[in-house]
Image (cartoon, rainbow over the protein chains, first blue to last red):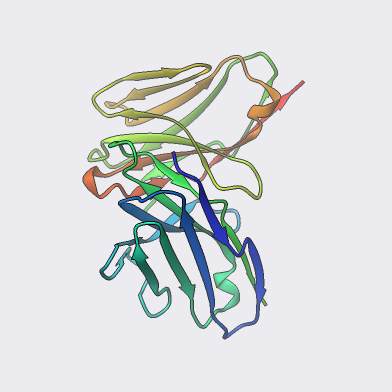
Length: 115
Length: 112
């Protein structure tokens, strides 16, 4: 597996502002993903963060709302833009492709509350 | 459209007994299945997985069973321990894209 850290661990933000979440991995990984877990819900994939190219977004998620960067094989950021209370969630990054199988390993998450 | 379903939101089991968590899926193209465990304020931790070409995989106290004809998988934990109390998610993967689709989770409580 890999050691994955996220910053910040939690934040309370005002409506209309933006927050950038950082994900750092202790080794180079081919695949990085961003998920959202809304209160009482399951984990939903937002996008696949591609190194050196634009992220691949899932249905219902758009780049203008959730811009993602991946400048190298150990780091990625997710920005939640123009926030509303509906964006209050836990945001998690994960990494995959470590062992040649389909396991993904998750960071500790960022708990975002929008007021 | 919920492609992966965990119909039991909670399960309570006595310490030392077997815990059985269930998961159903609808998409026959899923080719890999995983179970994760999540404690509050932490990210999900990978537990065990199974390829669609197998029907059983065992790792210590954890065994996953896959019934492809029924589109059903289950996680058996035996014996159950207090530290097993957590929310358990099943997840399914569609091929090389490695995108995971998660169920809603089952909260397992192990009682002493």
